[in-house]
Length: 88
Image 1 (cartoon, one colour):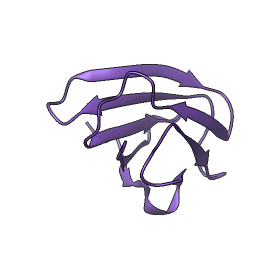
Image 2 (spheres, helix red, strand yellow):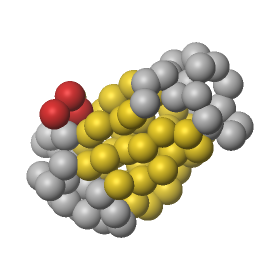
Image 3 (cartoon, rainbow, N blue to C red):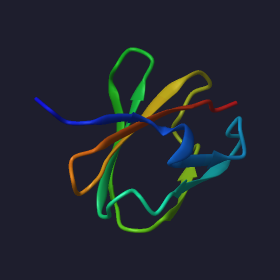
């Protein structure tokens, strides 16, 4: 499988960190919309899956325990972007 995986340091921006009640996810222009966002807990279980059609998305902490999560975004061209999410 030749799907490119990109470490999101320059393409995905989440603030504020750590996530208290909500956070904003911003996508750079190089990410082809629409895309699929999947949030995994530290055990690899899917906590949230949704389609994103906007460059700015509000993430709500409701239902997330404190700890580390991994956010994976797959864009229209099947390019994957990953980053960490830390609810506090």
